[in-house]
Length: 232
Picture (cartoon, rainbow, N blue to C red):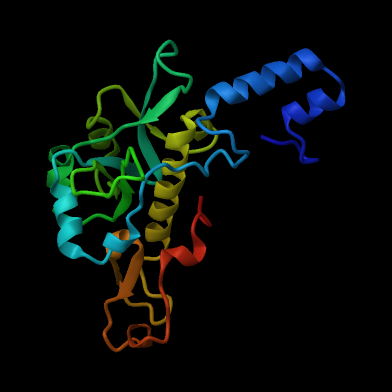
């Protein structure tokens, strides 16, 4: 985090020659960050997003139903999360990851669902279908108490500042998931003609349902990538 002049706590400690504090901050940063790169806290995402699979409806449907696939639930843009025991982790919260059977009854209503990627342990090894998949799903149409009941002891994390207490790996996943949920929430209607739109390509594209709309004739683009993270 930085102050109004763009300085971090480490910058200030170094400027005023507080060596003990600077060393402590540098050591703490090395222990908490899984890589050595200077980066935005929400920019680390170790998932393979498999963008080449987004247009494959059969692959996507099978991945949704796979036994090792997990879902991050959102309710009015707040993510379902649980508090982590301090002795177990450096982070204070972690995202709840639900199985399909936990939310199957709600999936029948076709909520906004976004494919976040798969967990690939070794990027040098070609992907198979067996890698665990991760999706985000919007359960805002379900009662808040019902959503909280999906994970015992869970809470609905409203974002900043609690999201800063996720692990760096989960913070990056959370940032992508929440930005996508915000995008789907705000753009349920075509910006060209105002007709309802539907989600396609794993949740990264919305298409106008009015077939006469010029956005369906190659004259308008309606992709989330245009404004990724603009709503986070």
